[in-house]
Amino acid sequence: MTATATFRFYAELNDFLAPERRGREFTCPCARAATTKHMIEALGVPHTEVEFVLVNGESVGFERALGDGDRVAVYPKCEMLDVTPLLRIRDRALRETRFIADAHLGGLAHLLRMTGFDTLYDNHFGDDEIERLAASQGRIVLTRDRDLLKRSAITHGCYVRALRSELQLREVFDRLDLARSAQPFTRCLSCNTPLRAIDKMQIAARLPPGVRQRYERFAVCDGCQRVFWEGTHWQRMRRLVDSLIMVGPSTHGTDGAGSHAVGR
Ligand SMILES: [Zn+2]
Image (tube, rainbow, N blue to C red; front, side, top):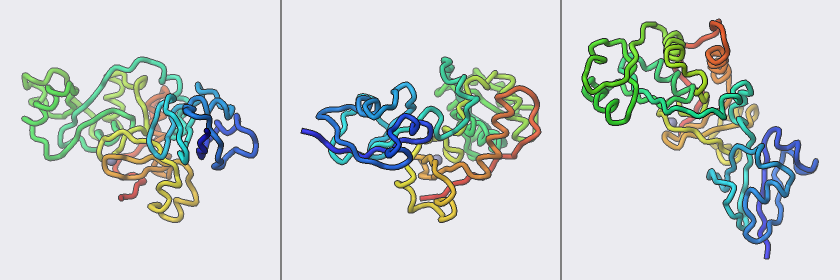
C-alpha cells in the first residue's frame, strides 16, 4: 500500500533532482511508512544538504512518516538567509546569550534580534521589571543607565556608550564577541519570536502583488504573524550584518526600524 505526497525542493537542492522535477511541485508515491529522510534521499538529495523540512507547513524531523496527500517542502542550509559566509559559524557550539534592553535602546534591541539574539524589549519596562527579568531568565542587561547596572540582582550587564543604534550594535558585538554566534534573520524584529520559513504558496494571498511577483523566499513569525521577505530593507540590513561579522569597519548602516512585513 502506498501513499502519494507532493514535494517541492528549494534552491540548490534542485541540482540533485531529475530535470523534470526541478523548481516545481511534483507528486511521488511513497512506500508505506516511508520517512521524510527516506523519500528525500530516494529522490536524489543527500540528507546532509538539507537544513529543514516542512510537511503541511510544519517543521518536522527526518523521521516523520509521510502520509497520503502530505505536502513536503525541503530547504537547503541557509536557503532562507542566503548568507553563505555565515555557514562557517553554524557548527560551533553556541553559548546561550540573551539580552534585555532598557527603554532607551529600542533600536539596538531591534538590531540584536536581526542578528538572531533573543532580546527582550518593551519601552514600558521599569527598572524593577528589568532587574527581575534579567535575574530570573539569565539575561544580560543593556543600558546607558549606570545605576540600573548597580542593582544587586543584575549579575550581567553591558553599559552601552555609543548613541546610534548601529554603533551600539558594533560595540556590543565587539565587547561580547558575538560575531561567531550570530544567526542573522532568524528572529522576528518586531516581537522576538524565532522565524520559520514558509512556502510561498501558503501565504501568497497575504502578499502585495509586486512582492508576490518578485520574491520567492519567505519566513513567517508565529508570534505576530508577520511575513518577511528579502526586500530592499533586508538587503540594507544584510550589509550591516556582513560588516559586523566580517572584519573591518562598516561603511553601511541603518538606524534600524521598519521591516518588510505584512500583518495578518
Ligand atoms: Zn513577530
